[in-house]
Image (cartoon, rainbow, N blue to C red; front, side, top):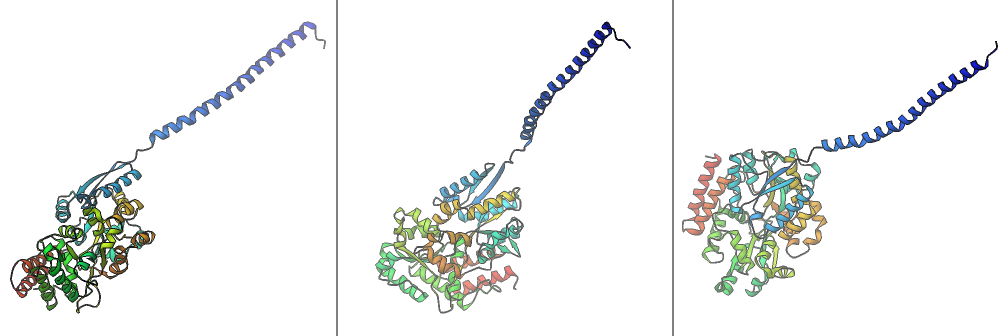
Length: 457
């Protein structure tokens, strides 16, 4: 078949046109690829931006902390510093700090619990965990505390906050009372050694009265007031004479307790002990070289330094020392009450996890230990902390607390009825030091009231 020139030209034109079309499609496809990449690249930040906006803000938490440390000049600023440090770690937390004088804490906590507005975290002492726990005002910390944290505590320390298997409070500071003595007063009165028996103690008190009594110096500092804490200070003296009140029954009107109450009357009548002064007043006198011997906790170190600036540094240890309570012939070991500052969480608390974090921070953080606990003079609640800060206890006051006092501490049989029982006993103490009623009648009347309270008659 013969192709004419005109047909050949037409065929070439068609082929050229088709190739142009396909080239255009290919170019458009190549141009579209970057567009798809651009859309993909732009989508990623957009998705990230949506994700960032969707992240929930950290919940604002307010904790109400009831304590007596903020009501005392010696510890107010240091506790504030510890709370500020906690807020730095948890910026979403704020505090309402309820500083309550020590002798009003128990009453106010009970009132707030009854009204349904308990503070979230509470500084506690003595029988308070038992009383508040039996009211349902405290949570069982076994529900929230880590086993390893509890294992790092001293067994006796946890026992003070445990009632009927529930852990209502954990230790904040181990503050069992040791026998404080003033070396300068002893030297001035011609007392060569620290009394280790009750007979030696009474001889020393007589020497102090004879040589320094005219200057307002007393041998002993026993709280003889009506405040709740006066009984905490007196329990070791009852034990020392062999009395065991409220252990295995009322057990109050006994020959051993009669001897103890006769001794209480004697130290007041003979002028060995000031009458009507609370523990805080007695600490002031001791810081001013007006009391030679006194049962008190290790925190007395920080308190007396705050009362007397001249006691800073080694001057304190040159003047004061600590040992265990003198013994009578009725006991074979020193009688030390396991008096502890502890911490509990309200059963009404809405932020129990954060409240527990705060408790651990108060009891074991380096900030709290170095800023509050050690300057205050506490033995630390955790075994690991005492090991880590062992150098801080290498002095004439803290070492005896750690090595002599704490190993001998034992718990008083606290319980829900202790508070009304203590009122009867404190009244007996008051009658002993402010009246001339016979000790036999005072003890008999107190025992009758206690038996009625405990249902023994």
